[in-house]
Length: 462
Image (cartoon, rainbow, N blue to C red):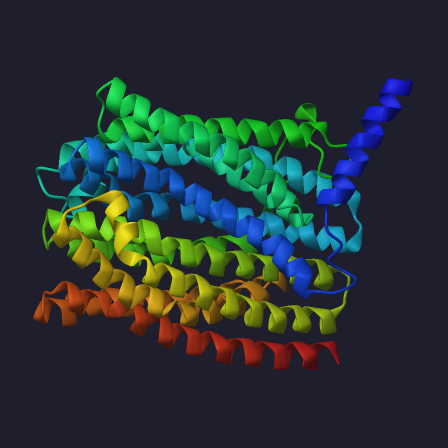
């Protein structure tokens, strides 16, 4: 009995140390403690793909490097819809946490676990059937197409465990715990790098080898998180016998998460359109764009982590009916996110050349990649406004409006730009201009929507 109580006390102490009280006390330091491990998690996830690109770039050639890079927008499009619903799970569980409704928390958790697995299986099946058509529609060059297809087919096999990891992470985030998902990802990230080198250098595989390494490492991270959830004694603890879909919980997750997923898919859809334009400029531009993307995306993960922090903090405080604290969370999130993003963007631009050389030493590829980063990284501060405004409204449970605005402002402008401005002047410089233009228009619209939303919200409460 003594050993049992010692183990129970140890688990309680672990949960107390990692869970965060978002309803009371200071906000700024808690936002940082929440967001920075989340940003590190996103960056580490991206390092999976960056390691893929770096290994094949050095050991398998530019064609294999381009093959991996050409799949990034496709994979983002396939993943983001269901991962958006994971954000819905985060909001729903956060709200029930603010209400201290342990039964609803438990039913939401078990629903999210099963939905992640089933959704991943569905995407795997559909993706495998449509893979050749998708790559053909993106105008992937013939010399890259076979390796691109092999990479995509292998990667698709890992969708169930990739989805599971993201949903499990959302469950931990709802309680303020962003450290446990980071720990699991560190372990699987090291494994991913080792397997990349093994499959490419030792086995002799190319793009398909690094995809296999990514799938295996995601399997490890998702299993580790599942074990941690099964060992918990609180409301988010998982009992295998209780895993089932609860319709009322799933409906709430989809209502909040699906628009958020569509918003993420909009970015991926517009990026597929842009990737198709990049592909038309040749393999050097493809390789350079792929390498630059794997660097600049680090700034985005910092931005996005504070957006998710804002969503979670607002969700819990909205559940506790503390609206003034919700507004304060939004203001502080915007200020801190802006400051951190400026610092990270400056570092990326300062070390742009040596960072590009990690992926490829070709001077032409390095120069093209730097052009891309100068356009995108410089404008990331505008992206901060988009993420925080969207994140705050999702925390209140209103995610349709930011999704619609993002669809029109990002997807609409970028697709129109590719088929008008870029077609008239088919240069990489012209193509990259679409990023700051689309962000600026969308950010302005989201600020206006948030101000209008809060006015109506206060009137309704009054």
